[in-house]
Length: 470
Ligand SMILES: [Zn+2]
Image (cartoon, rainbow, N blue to C red; front, top):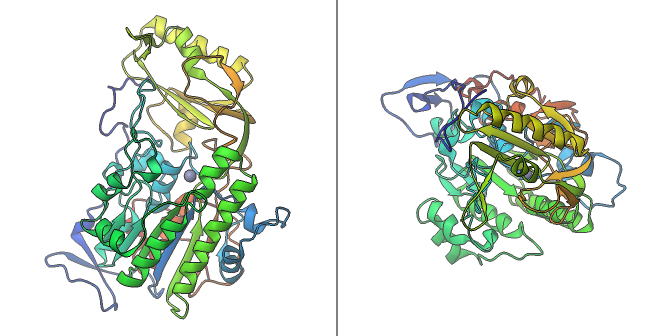
């Protein structure tokens, strides 16, 4: 049993295999490399010619949308063209929970959540907080990410709305961040501006019309990415497209609204591809972080945990934190002891678990042993995986089971669940056209991209071999 103090800055027990990147500089023949004095020199790991790299994350995109039969009549000409011109995976296994922030941290570090430290999207373990903070800040990542590897090699980097990137060593960074109390997080540009590279937001605001068209949520991200790509010519450009994820949550993973968002992301992929037409050193990567499952009903574990006395009530009648923390993430739900529980509290938690299993809303109880094998949160007592058609609600009141009021689609489930697979497509110099990479994992991506940038993958803390793309 692991009792943890509430909201420690770096909870968890695993020591990261950290590497002092500032003590290393890479040498190769690119003229724009910056000289760094007084540091060790290393040579590039292999003979792959360094390439400028565009990494486009289409949040939540399942590979069947561009690899499967065209039953949905989806128009994704640009992603399909890249898949035909390069290599692609049948499926890419996500992390647990299969949510955006842990997954994106894995994509750029090559390590599972238990190593990189982003165990869920939330920093806070307190489910009674009305507006919980997310893991926006790169400082919480405990191992080197690709942006640090690029910087150590003197490469120029840019990022647009990339998760867990606020404060990252990125030359031109417009991070994904918002005030959790803001009425509309997607319009909260003030918080983005405050955490962007100094002066960059003001420059973009004078050069581009910075407003979000709700029907085309990814268009602005594409505009900003194009501007940065053309003006600053970064070696590494990271862009996070979120339109499909939003619509798939709200209307369902195969809804017409979600399909329209996917086509919009494809159009932005096309604009960036057109902008680098004729530059044969550019490598394109289109990937995602997880898939999606449809939702009809919701289960509210906090209702049952509250009934068993594990949460109190304050003077206003609102739920009050005691010794148990919780994180709900769509298809998964985790509990944590914040203080060592009494025997009665442990019995109440055991009883709650039996009641939750009896609802039929739980596909699997993921115990500490399995969480360790998955590289997941070391502090969770257990996590629950939602049964087909269910998602976990954050409600403390109302019935334990009800029709889903908010979501028609969700993710967060075990990465082996059918439908939870992520996407990976890569096209560029030296990549064999049509090569099938089979089933890969999110941890394969970072070392593979490091090699594309001409950097040794052992600068990352992972021990995964780069994918063979030739
Ligand atoms: Zn996501």
